[in-house]
Image (tube, rainbow, N blue to C red; front, side):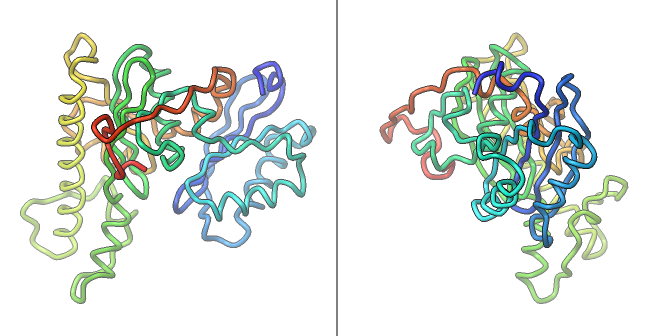
Length: 294
């Protein structure tokens, strides 16, 4: 599908993660609406997205709506597509796969790579063209990925996100409380070290520990890609994802915050216009991230 095919049509970008779906609508005049969010564990969540799009953004021309979907959850993808096909033609529904993203994935198994990581990495190269970028995506899982100046994805690392860490401590121990991750990560809460009560100790340990791990991983990623840096001597760093705002204030590494890189990528028509690159073939010695970045 070319840019001419999308011109004058509303585009709905849907980013389905492990726990929630986020969406935004780009109107024909290129205005993008505010980002909405719904839990994919809630009953009838696909209907909520469709109702919002049709009632608030595209009430007079539903047949013209073009849907672009990126997901790391196959069951959720099937749920959404099943609901969409009852209202929209199959030609208007596009699931974005790795081959649709104009970035060269230098990993062993591109088809196993999370599409959110590729989309965020590619969009980062659109923000900083010709420069190396470290993309930190802070969602249910946190990824720290390396993208080269010629739009090549070099792989990265994955660690548990804030919500998984809070849940793991609460459910995996007898004495520690299960904290609500959103409340526990509130920016207004002081993160004392040493903490003098259990709840504060959990908060400080997870938040400071996660920030420290990210800072260290950024340094290691920048050092490994030192030959492809800007004039400051370090790759640019972009922080994105649902917990990006909370972690931003705790990081020492210079960075910019772009909370919704994946949605921004889905709304960018260049994702469908630029040529799809051939799959690279790597041997074990060339693989920068092996199975960890499947």
